[in-house]
Image 1 (cartoon, helix red, strand yellow):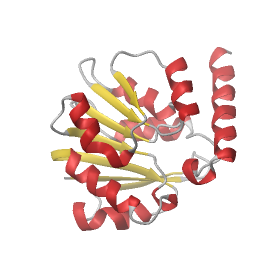
Image 2 (cartoon, helix red, strand yellow):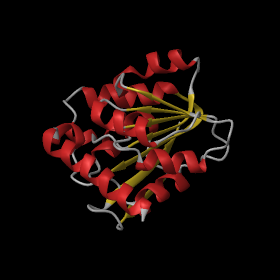
Image 3 (cartoon, rainbow, N blue to C red):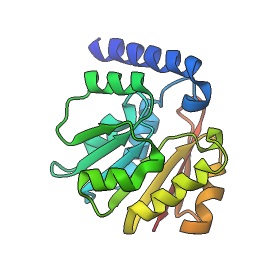
Image 4 (tube, rainbow, N blue to C red):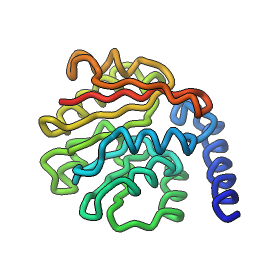
Length: 193
């Protein structure tokens, strides 16, 4: 019963912020349990030590990532919505997690703050289609530069705009799947650097 109440409250927090900031949040409902499990599973996190998550929202994907990570791995979640940050800080207690509000365009600063040269995996739920023109390309370039050689970039998106953005730097995606057990259905893409 506690998980159901938690899910309803999380959905309410997400919906309220989606209505207040439609371009920033871009979706009306948080990611489904099926989507977050699928994202964490296909990200292949077992050997990753430095993981960055862009746009965690209320933290559903964050929890799934933490469940798949090793005990000595670290996760930095980048979220610009202060209400989502407050919700995550209240509901997720894990020493492996750092939450920052610096914005996805600041990946070099985020890496430096963590003392990392590069990330092993970057997972993004930020809605690239609603980003201002130019910022979407700046973030993709930052993701590419922040990944170690052989590192993985996973994006789960409603539309395929991210695949067009990523192709000039990463080449064609190495994995694509649609998760239909999500409203709306979401595309999951993976690239390797």
